[in-house]
Every structure is written in C-alpha cells, then in structure tokens.
Amino acid sequence: MAAVESPQGLRRVRSFVRRPGRLTPAQRRALDELLPRYGVEESRADVRAAFPGPAPLVVEVGFGNGEALVAMAASEPQRNFLGIEVHEPGVGRALRAIEDAGLDNVRVAMRDAVEVFDRQVRPGSLEQVRMYFPDPWPKKRHHKRRIVQAGFVERLGNAIGPGGLLHLATDWAPYAEWMREVIGELDTVFVNQGQPYVERPSWRPRTRFERRGLGRGHAIFDLLFLRR
Image 1 (cartoon, helix red, strand yellow):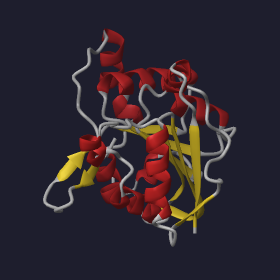
Image 2 (cartoon, rainbow, N blue to C red):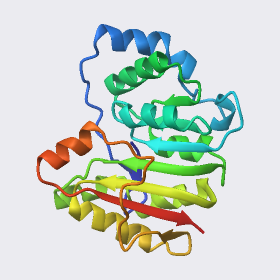
Image 3 (tube, rainbow, N blue to C red):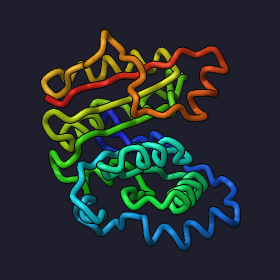
Image 4 (spheres, rainbow, N blue to C red):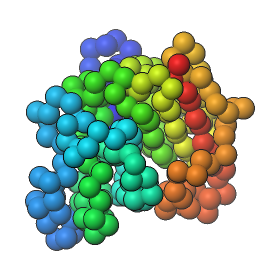
C-alpha cells in the first residue's frame, strides 16, 4: 500500500503491515521467474517506459491477490495497468495470473506506493488511479494508518492528468465517509461525481473482498472523483 506522513512530519506512518505470509512453491517461482519480466525496477524514472506501448496508464494501489487487476487489464486492452502491492504471496499469485492470461499491458511494483508515486510517476502522466477495499483500520487509534490521507491524495492529484479519474471502493461505511471528507477538502483538485457515492462502474470487477463484505452484511460504497 503506502506510507503517510505523521502529523509532525518526522516519520512516515505505514498504512500496511508486512506480514510474512507463506509463499507456495508456485508463488516463489513466479517471483523468481516472472517478476523480472513484469516488475518495474526501482531505478526506472518513469513507470510508463516499462510498457511496450504508449496507451493511457491506470494504477491500482494495493491490488491484493491481483484478481481485479488481471480482470481489468484483460477487459481493457486499450489501457496499460500498473499494480502496486507489498504482500509477496499476493504478488506471486498475480504474476501467475498475468502470465496465464497472456497479458502484456500489466506491470507490478512490489514496494511502498508513496515511493512509486514520488520517484517514478511523472506529474499528470496517469489517466486513472483505482483503489479497491483498502484496509479500513477501524480502530480510532489506527486511523492515522489509513492510506486515504490528505498528503497521499495530493500525490494522486499531482499524478493524474486533467479529466482523469480517482476511483475508490470500500465496504466499511465509516471509511467511505472518511474518504469522501478527506478528498472533498481538496475541492480545487478533485470533483466528486456522486451524490455522494456512485453505482459500481462497469470496469470494477467484483472480487472476493467485495463478496466477503457482502456476506457480512456490509454495503458497498464506490467513490468517483474527476481531476480538475
């Protein structure tokens, strides 16, 4: 996911916890054999150069096991997709799915999203950023770990070109309200396209995270913002 600035600006508060997670042999092979092919090196100054063509670029922040990332890339071949995720088993699973689907419009970055946006994404170079079901960190003392914070949203606004989109989804109602309020405060950058939410756009596939939320009786909230 990402790291966000602390209130004092002295250290960054991680919005993710690096859980070791058991890698299956297939996931380990995928990391060893496929990450060199589909991964974006830290040294690359512009992530767009990692793709074979100049198609519009969409970034999914925190793609989990890659279920949505692979489905979107397969259904939208006219776009390039960059997925950002730190959890190794999820990255390994996504790499296998990318290879099995024969996709060449997907690349992955297995590191902190803040580092990627700060060092490798040129201003105004993205068509869209999509962020689905990030950790809601429901306890109040953990709210500082939520990825949707003013500093990170400002980074997204800098990266998305005029007329581009920021699309978020969550099954945690208090987090949906938090997202709406945080991004709403940046009204010179983003315009909310919902009242206050939108119906699930056709490009967002249903994933196991959504199905799990629905199974728990949660409502699903989609938020869509236009970059001014």
